[in-house]
Amino acid sequence: MPAKPFAAIVTVGTELVTGQRLDTNGAEIASALLVAGFAVVEMLSVADDAARLALHLKRLTDECAVVIVTGGLGPTHDDITRDAASHALRKPLLRDASIECALAGIISRHRHPDAAEQVLTQADIIEGATVIAPTTGTAPGQIIPTATGYLVLLPGPPSEMRPMLADFLNAHGSATPPVRLRSSGVSESDAQLAAQRVLGDRADVGLTVLAAPADVEVVLFDEGAGATELTRLGELVREALGDACYSSDGSSMAETVIRLARERGVRIACAESCTGGKIAAALTDVPGSSEVFLGGVVSYSNEMKVASLGVMKGSIAQHGAVSEEVARAMAIGAAGVTGSAFAVSTTGIAGPTGGTPEKPVGLVWFGIRTPSGVMCERREFFGDRDGVRTRATMYALNLLRQALLDDK
Image (cartoon, rainbow, N blue to C red):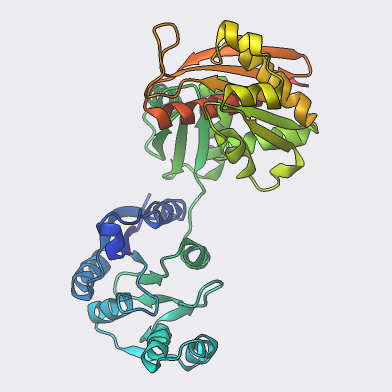
């Protein structure tokens, strides 16, 4: 199979290289390029320095079929990407009359003539470029042919960047979408070995394993196998992962839970202590979750557990807030308050303090209420406070998933 065309990503902004803002565009663009059939060989962030950026762009456009640049296309003094690209390619910037006209309304908001001129710099297009009109924001994107392929200039704000990137890749990318299998409750190494046992020494399928707390994603890329064979192998890897695999299309755990609840026509709820609303946040991040998710109660204090969920004071006094009895009562209370058929609860010690030999930091009790009754589970998680809370959130969502699968 021919080698994949090389691609590089450049994110522009002094705020990125000084740590004032996290670069999220780079990872998102890299994933999209991989799906579109490119091999990403380099990713870098560059300060608002036109000369330095021009040097990088000159080198990368000589080496790569596609160079994606994001950021530095706005109307302020530090938006230097247009000038840097013009210098790197030795092509002039030309003022586009139609874009200039479209910016007239923006200019009218500025009183100072220099501010108006700065706004109009967004209409400066590199000679020979194809303009990508903005769907949000004011800065257009630009696709400039190079000797090896294309230099693509995109705005920095993700909401402005995404539709332009999709436009370019829809026109210039061609690849079989990867198979994405997501699992929980299995280690990164075990997931990798399960996939490798299926794939053997095949050179026509690429394998990547991506790990996050309590979430492992196995990604299979087409390196010559073809779409049909990739799908078949993905199904075999899914079977090898077993019950730990909760998604075969890249859907998140929360998306899977919402889909299952919708398919079964049931409502769900949660009661949270140590997870502090992270379960509810994950579920409500899913579009359309209001169809099935009725709500949650964050009962962080003992008083709230009693007042909002009906947990008995005696249970807390006898067993402690982090206990099977309290987790059970919280799940029952959440179902009762919301009128839902399924409810999950969490109560634990996220740390870094508060642990004892009997109840160490990382201990979490879960309750899961279903039409068949209530079950509780005790788990101990490692990591810092955020790690414990994240792992507990994933485990709670997985309990909901398993309960919904069992409800047939």
